[in-house]
Image (cartoon, helix red, strand yellow):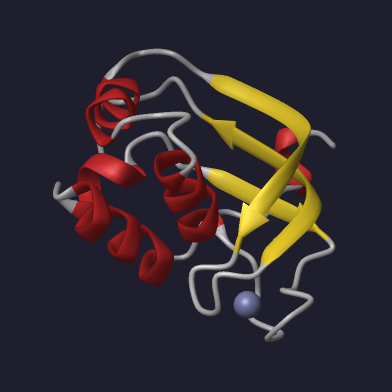
Length: 111
Ligand SMILES: [Zn+2]
């Protein structure tokens, strides 16, 4: 998947992630994060799997601290990956084996 085919994270999801990381929404949005999960919906409750589920799964699994994620968002690094993830649904806490694609711009100025 190329970056442009991955859907930009919505403002509502950016706001949820910002509240979870305890930072301003603009700080989450500066890298214009894009996110896609396949399959795209929770197998247990039907919720659309989104960037918020990805961030909370990374935190709850011990993969990344909130501080680590904030440092990355504040950095000038771009990043894009496609990888298999056991994603925990933030609504029902059910596990979903999905393929996740994500992309962050390196542009952090002018937003
Ligand atoms: Zn669910």
